Length: 119
Image (cartoon, rainbow, N blue to C red; front, top):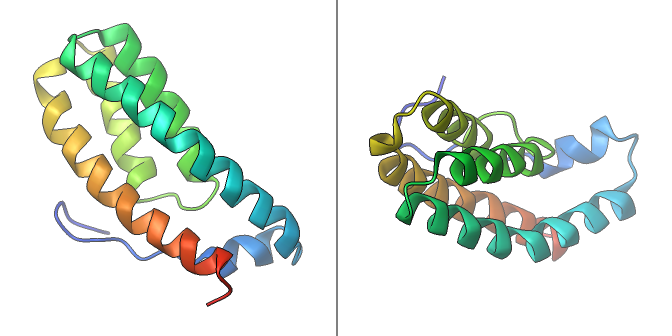
């Protein structure tokens, strides 16, 4: 189990294995993720800034789905916590969870970039 503040590790080659070795398909998924992530993060930041439970819940749910394609912990778990906080009216937790999510997403993005570059 990971603890807050620790960076999870990402095994993108494990994703390839789960998908039957189809590296080209996983590469397409990585490209789609990279294209969509900035838009979703901006929407989440705006939802947190506006204290909009609906926007935070919807956007965090989308990010949870996007990230769970690559990992079930780290950003997927933090996005789930954001969904729960928004649903339960605990938006005071959203800024801290957003900062944590952004940090975790940097680590995931770095792993995906290495995968894309063939390293």
